[in-house]
Length: 333
Image (cartoon, rainbow, N blue to C red; front, side):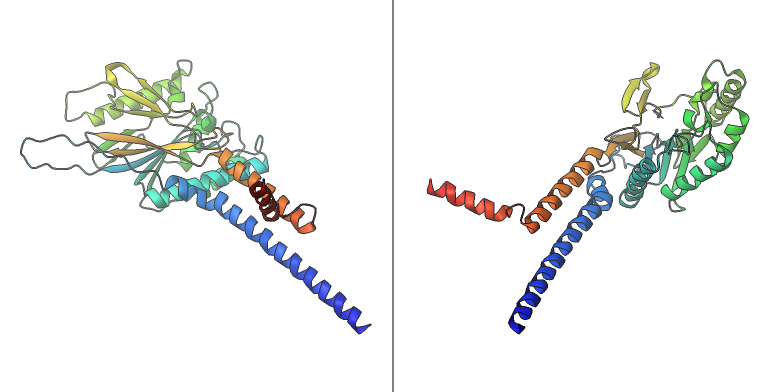
């Protein structure tokens, strides 16, 4: 009887040891996959991005004086979901992606100024006061940044409505949170931030105000030159399309559309990195992790866990044993 009890005790101990070892392996795999997909992948992908080099003009034997280079980051169309159309899982997944991408880029690339070119919120055009306050709080958490980094935000149609939906209340509500300045200058470079949804012809009052502001800015920019009655930019960066495209306007002015920053709008979100001086600029695109890459890793890990459990339960032969048998069979034939 004592021998039987000792045998059962050993069997239970071995079974418990096996289960504990399986649980340890499952936990290790889950932790490793979560760590990679939710943290490390952002460092791996964004680490490959580099600031573009600005071409400096050649000088004939004279000493060259280099202008200071401003590192500017441009992103667009974050579309933070609201209380009406925002499912909690969609919010959790996409907002975590944007937060990790932004914070990783901030730490690795260390930009001096960041521009978000419209459509920060998805439901700003109709959200209530409380919903707006909640959305703003989430935005400030996701896009937190050190004090020495400038964050400039331009209103989009989803923030204040299209030209036929806009009103003074929505505009003032937006400007209360985000600095409404239209002209921003740093290191001798002038940035003019324009809310393009106010420039439609059927919103006469707002359109007139916008045009008046642009004329005033053009006076400030050209006070020491011949008087110009309109802006003459050397580069235009815009959002709204969710995709990257380039258009060359009259007089050779290029316009680059900045892709969406969110997985909700693109499988391959990205942002633009700009190295700028008062006379030159260089742009480069930095891609974020592809959403399907993360999903593929999760699906592969789930399949591996299923195989691991089936092998433990004896419902499936160990892959190593099966591989060894196949190899021996191949050698004997």
